[in-house]
Image (tube, rainbow, N blue to C red; front, side, top):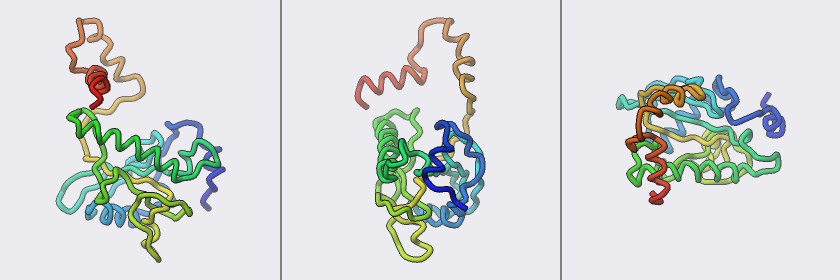
Length: 201
């Protein structure tokens, strides 16, 4: 049985809560249909990646052989309070991802932003209807209603990048010796982010 929004909110301790198994309320076929409708991606393979940190993740390969990193955020557990409307939660996430897209479009290629859906938005609402409304893939009747504008999950699609990941603090520890070797040459993530914020790009 699916827990109510209040129970989900009470169970959440932090953004970095473990999300290590696929969501019960978002079936693979529903997600695949959403990717087809929203991003024109025809799924060939889909594998859940238990990366955690507040979102559900899948590695997806489409029929052209392209690989994608798909995320789904459960809007019910991202509320700041039990009374916060899911549309407001969705709006916060949409604004954050849109900002990442603007940074990327401004030439800041170190920012990995989601690809825009066919409606131009950086994400779409998918899954069981919650009675809310918002930008998404469009409500329908029958099975298609699970990719409607009031869906419980916010889905975003990123290009798949083969890179090294770090645990909390590991990146800074790895850089610690270099931090005392000489002045910053300006090619660090922090330096590039600083330039981007100063120029408004």
